[in-house]
Image 1 (tube, rainbow, N blue to C red):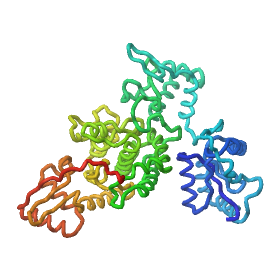
Image 2 (cartoon, rainbow, N blue to C red; image 1 turned 60 degrees about the horizontal axis):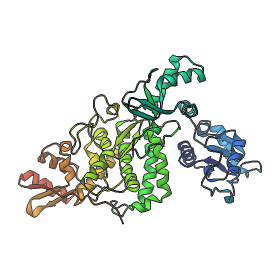
Image 3 (cartoon, one colour; image 1 turned 135 degrees about the vertical axis):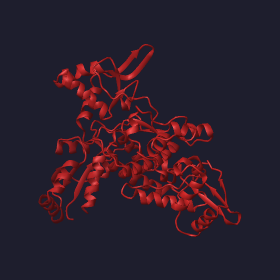
Image 4 (spheres, one colour; image 1 turned 180 degrees about the horizontal axis):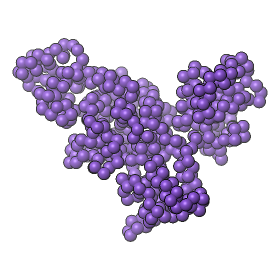
Length: 482
């Protein structure tokens, strides 16, 4: 190309990544300019050229295409797109076109000045921005309890009626939209999904006092489908794993991950989990999404908070390590036992993760998926190797993961001379998922093993009925490379 395609973006912007992905799919080379890394003069020039503070902003030479939505429309207009491609291929970028900023203009102060850019906002996001500037958000007392950074339903309705020129009914509908789109919730009961024109107190989710690792990071961008966000996170996670996993896929260089720019980008993207649309996801999409998020959450927690070192710390780790996903808190236990095991009791749990009134029960799989036990990684050395999973190939990938785990001595050890089978503790802890009885578990294992000598030997043992079964000790030592 004689000319150039410029994409002005910011780090962590989903619309920017989608636009760049689209250009890549079209085999169009582009130059990515992260405006948040440059001084105020560069950002100011972009605002003057486009009249916008949102990114991405895309240029074919001097022609301003616009944002991601504009690019997607352009892709549908084949004739117009081809003319722009031809312009860039045949002509150098003119003097009046935007240029790649000089590296001397990079921001070394660590601040963004007055020109902060964001992705394209939806209507509720704009309302939240106004709400923050309204003075309604403050501390509210009810009896002895003080609810910090909250607002009262009736006062919110008053404010919307006054500033948005709507009646009270419409103002309540706007408040309801904040709840449904996972911007806010009732301070006492997160399962209460009704917004009321009353003295009930509400809080923006990003101001909540929860201990989620993506707390306070709510994205104001339009929420994305789980399948789309999940695939993007999968690619990031895969890049991180490829650089920091041992050759067998079980050891992790946590210290190296902490300083990796891709890990920092992943952490930024966890803000999008707060409002991700998981309700419309298919079973395959949920499987891939939640398995990848679970494994990434384990890594995130070990990097940020350090690994658990004893039984009590492990209990806390799995029950309290959490993300906000689709407006609700999901701990590691909630993801594994609530969603992926179709709301079954986990190890040491006296009740199911989700009650009948818990809205998260609508996200849970209709039936458990036993293959998840060969994909979820707990951070210990006896866990299965770390991989990533795609919605399009999830069942094939899970089958391969099961075969690999059962082929290893960590998953299944067969001592033919002793007629003995030793199994991973995982298969004992979750026996109910594999058929309940010891014999049913072994039959399941035999069916899901890859073809080979090990499977043949196990088959002969099962046919004879003359075998001894036991379980391997579980190695809870951290799967760290260092």
